[in-house]
Every structure is written in structure tokens, then in C-alpha cells.
Length: 310
Image 1 (spheres, one colour):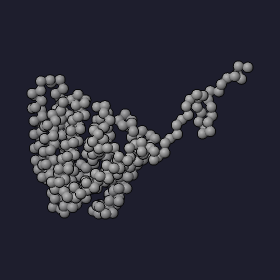
Image 2 (image 1 turned 180 degrees about the vertical axis):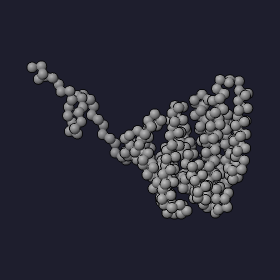
Image 3 (image 1 turned 90 degrees about the vertical axis):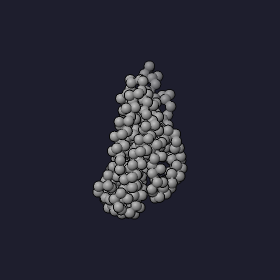
Image 4 (image 1 turned 45 degrees about the vertical axis):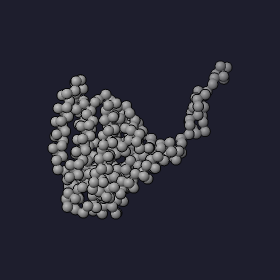
């Protein structure tokens, strides 16, 4: 009969999954180590082994050395941001942006004196400068992206300098400033590392696919756990002025802010249509890709330390 010659609609595999005849078998999931290699873990590790000692000694030295380091981060990050904006079709006033961002960081180094003056002067100068552009079709956008870059990279990044100088501004031992910066950097990068490792090893559920398709809920949870644990460890030696419970809570808050900062930069890049802000750092992208989380965590931790600890 015709029914005897009918082909089965599916074939039962030993694993229990049904596949259609002629369909290629489902590729096995790569091992965790293979997934780490495919995700570029080796270049990341190489950069970490070089950068972390350099950042440690410069931060410990403090003073003008740390200011130059922070200015380099701000300058390169702002340059990458303006490149993104130009790819979007905007025309920010780059020279003015660089000057204003550097001025903010230098005044922040001088215990915050003059920062409101710089911010006010920057706003006025940029708006007046736009009056002389012939094409006025995007005047509001040009002004907005220039000022946003100054505030996002220049002002937020200047909190690194303010945090390092905080003990000196309040008449406390200078070495505490280095410890505050180390704490902020450690909990932030612990978040990034924990999210990366957990995401690659266990990631299944997308966190915010419309903004960053590769970020997962499992990675976000791993980042928070890593930040909280790092804070707890820091309370044992690096920051003895924090109780283990307080350091853990602060670490968790930093973990939330770090991931929000990463998502905000991903949102900007997705709007522009560019994956990485630059290719300056192997395995990490650009300076903005590497320090976007710190731009969110450092201001929050600075004001916590400023008003409740130091």
C-alpha cells in the first residue's frame, strides 16, 4: 500500500532529538576552553599582564604622573567618541572639546577649583562657535554631541583625578587616594571579567539583545558576584576602613554601575553602527571600550567615599 512506502517525517536520534531527513546533524557545543579561545581570551590576558602593573605604579606615584595618565585616557576616549559621532554624520568641535575636557581634569587636580567656571565657559564658547558655521541644518546636534562628549568623557573621567586627590584635599594621608582608585578599578574590572567568563561559559539568556546581542543574564549575574566578592576581599587588606559587609555592598553597587556603563557605550555604538570604538587595545577594542565601565563606577564611588568614608 501507499502507506507502507511513506517516508517518516522525522528520525529519532540517540540523544532524544528529532531531525528531518537530510538535515545536517546539530554541531556539538564547543568546550568551555574552546569558547574562551574563540572569544579572544589570550589577547585580553596579555594586555592585562602589561597594563595592570603600569597602572599600579603610576597610581601609587600619584601627582602629575597620575594626572597625565588620566588625561591620556580622557583624550583618547574623547577622540574615539568624536570619531563615532562623525560616523553618524555629526560635526563636533573636536579642538574645543579636547581643550575643555583637559581643562576640567586639570582644575579637578587642583581640588576642584574652577570646574564650574570651565563648564560654563565651555557651554558658552561652543554655542557661540556654532554661529559661524555656514550649514545650520544640524546646529543643535553639533552643539549637543560636543558638550555631551565633554561631560561623558571629560567630566566623568576627571573623577579619577578627583578620587586620587581626595585625601590631599581633605588633609588625609595621600596613600589612601591610591587605595581608593585601586578599589574602584578592581571592583569594576572584576565585574567585566566575571561577566565575560560567566557569559562565555554559561550564557544562554540574552540580557538586552537590542543593545548588545552578546551580553547574557548569566554573565550579568557573574559580574555582580565577582564585584561583590572582590569588594569583600579588598576589605581584608586594601581598604581596611571599609567593613566586609560595606565593601561587599559597595562592590555590588559598582557592579551594577559598571554594567550600565558598558551598556550605555554599546547603545551609542549600535546607534552609530560600529562594533568597537577603535582597535587600539588587542582583545579590548579602544580606550572607550576598556574604560566605559569606570566612567560610571568612579563618580558614584567618589561621592560615596567623599561624603561617607574619607
